Image 1 (cartoon, helix red, strand yellow):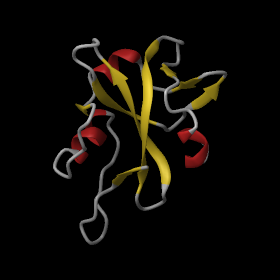
Image 2: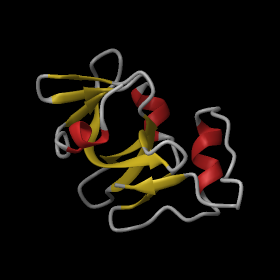
Image 3: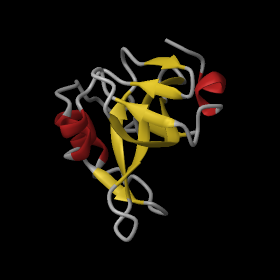
Length: 118
């Protein structure tokens, strides 16, 4: 895995799937609040008039010259929960992001959010 400060430098670069197919452009990074490590990224997807930010896990992601390669397929990311380009992930929608990728979800011991945008 890579440090959160390192991945932030990749904002605006292409995000591709394991087969090298372009999914979109890296917009932001969400960290796991329990570890402060990068956990999800948002990727700008859609047509120019209907852009949205889709969530993709960073587990197994690697960087290459000018791109971020994620382990999920392009199709799965494009069907993932998303937010408007100027939107925010609500606490109520957070579990759905994890569920889409079949990842375990548990809020903090005091009910805190699991993800924070960095």
